[in-house]
Image 1 (cartoon, helix red, strand yellow):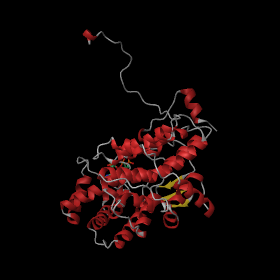
Image 2 (tube, helix red, strand yellow):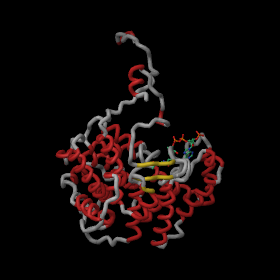
Image 3 (cartoon, helix red, strand yellow):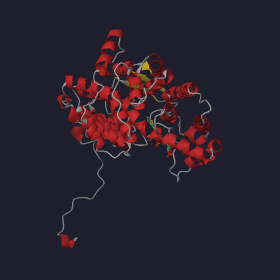
Image 4 (cartoon, helix red, strand yellow):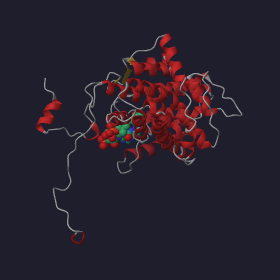
Length: 405
Ligand code: ACO
């Protein structure tokens, strides 16, 4: 067996692979994707089973510890997470420094990064106990932070967590209750939100997860590494696609709705237009993203529960999907709906503002980032991530005095 890393180090050879199209950056036992089949497994369990038979905190436990919890383990884990839902009271003053119209992802990048200043008793990434407590803190506090960012943007008072509620109901309480009015949890909506969390919990070595691993590989603290993941997720080619997909559907609706799909698709196919069909295509899935299927089902459930089955955006999305799946451009490139195509419609129906979609994705993905970080740090062979480059700049030259340049 040739140790390719040693060989490359000895000979000075390295591979050149922009966008990491065919480079495995690590070994991982957490999430498996078969892009051709459209299969997604967390620790071996199909996403369809997890999304319909488990809740988000059970899924978190599975991703972190490798097995689904039994009753006792679940109770203990839920108790530990629930103990940490509050954030340090000083955080609200930090939040007040932001403009109220700041994008929630700008605010979240700051807030999550700031956790390392507030919880500096757990910042040694090489200490398993520190990693454990920061994992629990991050999972517990993300809903509180997202809802604080939302309430701040609305000019409303923050709602403190209500720990008698479950994880997802608590999030919805912090989002939608006011001091004047309780939030009455609707089971269908809570379940839909919980499913959104499950579907977004991990997705192997995507851009933000690779960012978290690379950032953590320098030995920085867990909160800083997760903040880097939040920043990366923001981009429209990644987590920002759910916001972009809903904006796209609303634009088509304004143009005239279903009747304008042909015109829109023609624009997407025109390579000079720079317009993409947002929520379509994936680096790994060359088949239907299984999460998109579950999201489409959830869309039906939520819209039915709210009496919105004639929702024009949902109808538009389904019609657009049908046109794209029959179009040679999309078929030949194996472009199918991804999770973001329908998740925006569900979130909008639940009452989540579009600008918060990516922050909710970050909330859900936090557990995946932590599990991946833990896996990397626990590997005795892990090294600082340090890609090489193909240098294309000037050859050696001498500095001229300023008057001679
Ligand atoms: N609309 C139109 N054309 C597309 C789309 C799209 N959504 N996605 C890919 N293509 C085209 C490309 O233009 C390219 O065409 P070409 O061969 O004629 O040049 C071909 O399909 C291959 O696409 P690449 O960009 O090479 O694929 P890559 O793996 O680099 O990109 C990505 C994947 C970024 C997800 C891309 O499909 C995209 O931008 N989709 C829209 C944004 C989106 O939905 N992102 C969410 C991803 S899932 C997630 O992060 C949770």
